[in-house]
Length: 492
Image: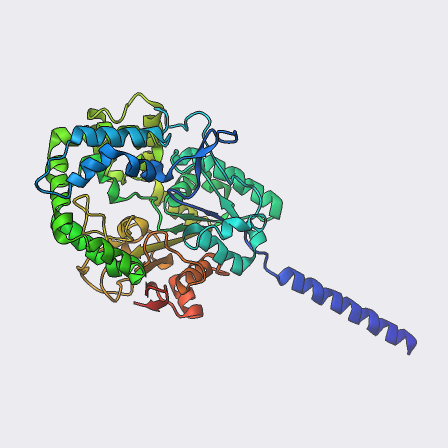
């Protein structure tokens, strides 16, 4: 009897041990998530790491210096008055001096100026950088914080980079982080999330490293991987009209974040149609439509400000690149013998291979997730002002190929990929089954702990294949959703 009891005990112990092992094997290991910002997402410094360290004004626009410049302000005020003549020589000269002195522009080879750098270059998780998560209640910081709630801070990493620079070279730095994260966590694969310009970084990374097969999900959030029509300024497509600007400002009262900044835009509009209209008409007639003065503006202001920064050039849509290069070369803005030119041509070729790279990645097991927003008109400074956008990136580009109606218009036909408001036909997207569209969430305005950002974080961390149908089955939200001013989400 004792012998039988002993045998039973041994069998039970073995069964318990096997059961425990089974649970351990069944437990799914969390895939580390790397998030990266877009344009303006990291602070830039002159004399970085020295006692003379100073932050470069955001986008190189020193608004304090502008407001304190009497000559600049005197000429700017004249724009609001029909009876006063603007001295554009003075206006451009002073503006050019200010933007040129910030240090924002790169060298002619597209490199940072000597002594420049960015803060927050880490190889550890955001668990050690809580200040990053709380830095601002929108943009990539909010997305990272929301993802932390899904997978834990130890599994989330932030890739911070100098957003002025070349995407290919930035992708090489991202590669170092991917390798470091895999080594630190023991994970075989990572998820990479790129917002805005970060989408272009993913594009370059995918082109160079897709065969490594160590990315589980590539997630593009309002990405610039195929450019934006705002860069048509490089094509000399520089147009403004009173009706368009006034309509755009009025439109933003409700379209910007579903009306969250209603009072702000009402205050701007309170300047009055007359004053705004006078300024717009002057700018259009005396600069946009005046070839000599337009060229003066580009050479005196644009060139010293950002003409040597690779990233704006790399946001030019593929089809527009050659024309933009020719026109800017004739203006003396772009030197075809420079290192800058070689860099932007290299990325242009990467951009041309993008859709093929996406298909290759999917064929070899990687998920490609795309988030594209819509419901806002384009900036009223080019002929593409009526494009459907998220205010910065055109929906057709962010979605990797959706057929998108002009703002206020409708697409033809119907089908499961056509939005109920008939603004979008997603059937032409590169990945129609894993592309979501958010209406009224403007560019980068993903606010922490809202329904919109929660939905985004769940898509990023979804266990198993995340498709339009699998997400709908689990959470009830469809491919096309809309946000109100509190970013509450409902199906369109």
